[in-house]
Image (cartoon, rainbow, N blue to C red; front, side, top):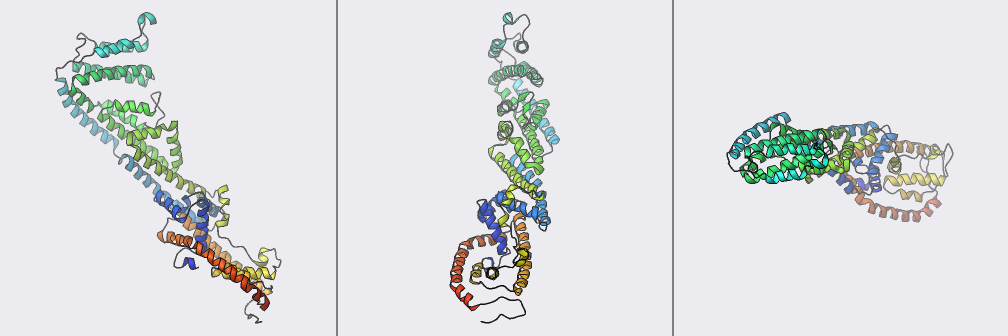
Length: 489
C-alpha cells in the first residue's frame, strides 16, 4: 500500500471514492471545494449525483453500514436550523421583538411629527391647488354623457374636489389641505380593500398631485411628512411587509411594480415598519426551509419570480443571493438525507456498483462446487498475492496445476476478502457521510496524485510477468496446503 503510507484511508477505500467522483466529473479537489462551499454539515455525498448514488446503494443493499450512515446524516440535520437563522440575520438583520419595536417606532414618530407639523402649519404660505382641481376635472366623466347619476369613480373624485376647492379656491391653507389629503387617502385605502382598485388609483393620483403642490409651497411640510406616519399607517406598512411573498394584495397581483409604487409613497417610518414586517416574513418562510428547503425554493420561484424580485427591492441583491445560495445548499443536503435515510433504490445508484468494494469468491464457492483449471486458480491466487504488494499483474507469472490444498487456501482467502470488503464498505460509507476531515482529504488527494505512477508500475509488472512466466511453467512450482512444504523442483 505504497500510496497509503501513514494515512487513515485504506487504499481500497480511496480507490472507490476517487473512481466514484470521476463519474460525476470531479477530482478530489473539486469535490472537496463543493463541500466546503456548502458549509457546515455538508458531506462528500452532497457533492454530486455519483457520490449520492453510491451512498444510496450502500444504505440500501448493505445493512451493516446503514446505521453508521444514518447516524452521520441525522446528526447534521440539527445544524440546518441555526444555519438558516444565521443566513436570514446576515440578509435582513437580527430578529427583533416586533410589538416592542412597533411601539417604539410609533412613539418616536408621533413625537417628531407633532413638532415638525406644528412648524409647517405655522408657515402662512398658501398652496396653489389649481393644478389639482384641473386634474380632477379632466378625469370626471361628463354627467350629460353618462346620465344624471355620476359613475362611482367620478362621484369619488367629485367628493375629493369638494375637500380641496373651498371658499378660498386657489389659495388653500396648508393645515386644511393636510386634513383633506388624509381624508382622500382613507377613501382610496377603503376602495382598495374592497377590491375597487380603479377608484383607489384615481384617488391616490389626486392625493399625490396635491401633496406635490403642498411640498413645493411649504418645504417644512415636506420635511415633516417624510418623517411622520400615523399609527395606522405604520401598522399597515408592517402588515404589507409581512405579506411581501403573497401573490396578491387586496385583489391585485402583488408584483414588483406594485411594491415599488407603495414604497415610493411611504414615509421613512412606514418604510421602517415595512422592513420590520419583511424581516418577520423571512423568518416565517425560511423557517420552513429547515425541513423543506426545496419547497421554499419552489415557492419563491412561482409567480414569475416576483417573490425574489420583491425581496431584492427590500433587502438588496447581494443579501438575496446569499439567502438563495443557502437554500440551494440546504436543499442538496436534505435531498441526500432523504434518499439515503429512506434507502431509496434509484436508477442513479446502479452506476456506482463498480465503485463499492465487494469480494468475489474463488474456487468451488464461486462455481457451484466445480473445479477450476489449475492455471486459472494459480493466476488468481498469484494476483491476490501480488495485489497485497500493489502488483496484481504478477499473477500472470503463475499458471500451475490445482490440488486439494488449493481449495483450503481459496476458502481462507474468501473469508479474508469478504471481511476486508466489509471493512472497506464501512470506510467508504463513513468518508461519504461524515464531516470532511483534513487528514481524510489529504489521503484521498495523495492516492489521486499517485495514480499515474501506479499505472506505470503495473505496466512494468506486466513486462516482468511475461519475462518470468516461461521459467515458472518449466520449473513446476506447486501451491499446496499447510503444514506441507513446497515441493522443490
